[in-house]
Length: 268
Image (cartoon, rainbow, N blue to C red; front, side, top):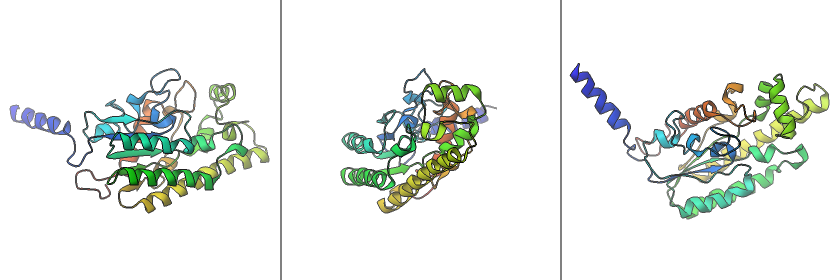
C-alpha cells in the first residue's frame, strides 16, 4: 500500500514539473476566444480559462499541460481582427515569449453583413506581416496556429433554439452568418455558404503561412474548424463564445496537433 502511495506521489510531483523543453514565457494572441470572453463572467474576458494560456486546471490549457507555473501572458483582445495581430506580436516579442499561440480571424468574418468581411488578400497580408515580425523579433520562437472555428456550425447548433436566436438578434451577433437564422430562402442559404467559404479561405492562408514560417510553426490541420461543437460548448450568456467546456475542448484538440515538448520540436 505504502509503495503504491509512494509511486503515486512521484507521478503527481513529476506532473507538476515543466516539460523538458517548455518555454519560460508563453503568449496567447488573438481575439475573444483566446481571451476567454464569457467563459467565467458576464461579458468579461476570463484569461484564466483560456485554452491557450489559462491557469485553470479544469480547462487544462497549453500552459497547464506544459507544466509551467508562471510566464503565461495573454495579449488576445475581444473583438480583435487580423488588423490587430501585428500589435499583439510586438507585445509578445517585447515580453520575450518563447512560445506563441495564434487564433485570429473569426471577427474578420463575423461582421454585421458579409460585405464587411475582410478580403482574403488583406487577411493574408496582415497575418504574414505579423508572423514575419514575430520570426524576426524572436528568433527560435515556437508558434502554434489554430484554425478558425466553423461559424456555420454555430448556426446549425442554435438555429432551433429560441433563446439563442434572441441573443443573436438583440446583440447583433455575427449577423453575416446568424441573421435570419430560421430562413431557408435561397439568398440566406447562399449567404451562409459564402461566409463559411471565407473562413475556409482564411484557414487555407493560415496553413500556407505557417508552412512558410518553417519547422518552428505548427498549424492544427483544421482541427478546430472540424471540431463538432454543440451548444454545450457555448456560453449561455451570448450563445456565441466558448464556455469553460468549450475552452477545455479547444485545449485538447489543439495540444494534440502541436509540438512534442518532451523531445524537441517535432510533431506530437
